[in-house]
Image (tube, rainbow, N blue to C red; front, side, top):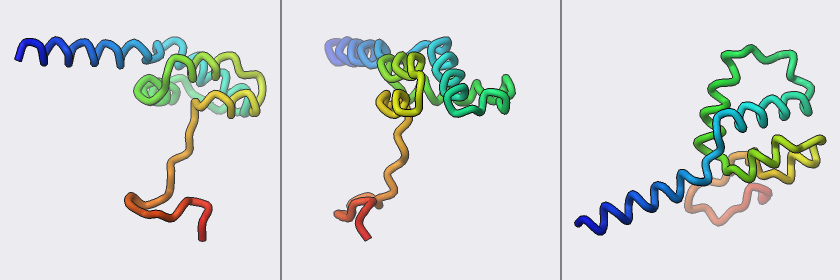
Length: 98
């Protein structure tokens, strides 16, 4: 039982090691807004929800890439934003199939 607890703690630490910092998520989100031309539309409080989602669903590498991006093409290479797959679970049909 003690080994299982130690293994679980180690696994959790390894997963947490690849989580971006709130500051880097904030910088990445602000850079994305600048690239998209929406930086003048954001209010300070609106960004914090995006920062929480960024920390929960992004890797350090993707956030750092989004921070460095200069164009939409650069941003697309970052895998920072992935659209949701619209294919129902268990379906053999791909999203592009009709």
